Length: 412
Image (cartoon, rainbow, N blue to C red; front, top):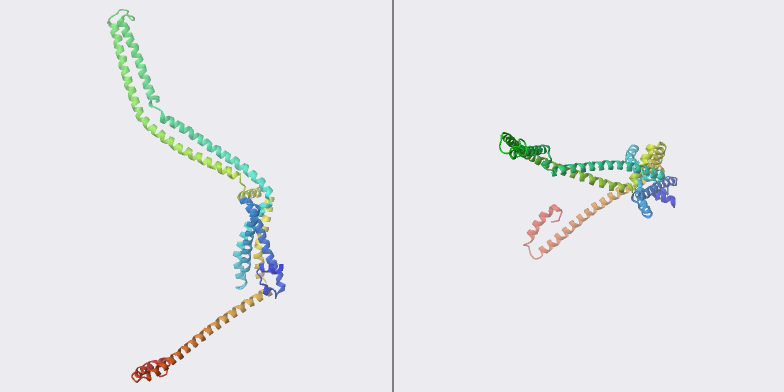
């Protein structure tokens, strides 16, 4: 019972296999290999669902069984469609794509199993990689924070420039100081002239004298200097206002540009922080593969073990195709000979059946033509008898019709 089921799984026909008992074990073994490969694929898929998607055990088992059935059907397709009908070379060439597909399936199936076997080491390496990523992310985050702080400082400086006035600029300040000094000197000179006029200082004699006139002239010169200084101040301030307007506009534009750049940096930093926080909590299939690659790079012994297990599971997937290919390279078995003869016989029977169907159709068409001809003759004779009974006027017409009917074999 089990052997027959395995043989059917291996692609054998039970009716032909019953006539060649010696080949039963071969096809039963092939079926066993196919089921073994499917079982390994189911286990691999279940582990992958648990590791990658956090699927509950029941769901992982059901998903693994579904994947195992898919792999079983694919492997049976690869094995059953290989034949020696077109020669050994053609069989080898057609087997190469099947081998490539089998290797690819082996890679897909073996990876979750290898990760499961090295799970303790992979978990430790995941922690190491997480710490390294945390350190690298912290360094990048600090660098980005420094750029944001630098942008804030520049924005504050440009805003200060944009909000400043011309009164604080150096030419204006110097011109204002010159006006104050000129005004102070005028105040002093004017006080001395007034004091000389009152007689409270200087010569001590009240009234206009030479000394008072000299001091009054000195006061007038000081006032002229004050007016010139005031005019210079107003000109300096006017010049500063014209130049300051362009500086303010440039400062505002630069502050806005830096504000956009600063917002972009802050948004990117916030997004990276959220993504890193989410990624640090997950340890899916890709993270485990990365950890396994890191382990194999650090520990050559573990890398060798990894490759041995990988090749083992990959070979199990390739094994059915290789076994079938080796069978095709060998001498045909009794079962294969019977199968070839059965195919030939079925083909010959089908060809004969098609020929007989064609012959029957031809004969049927011929009989149908003869029946149609006989029926036409009967109709002609009946019409002729009816035409001759009433009178002779219709006979020439029917005779002419009879003459025309000679081409189809009707009697006159």
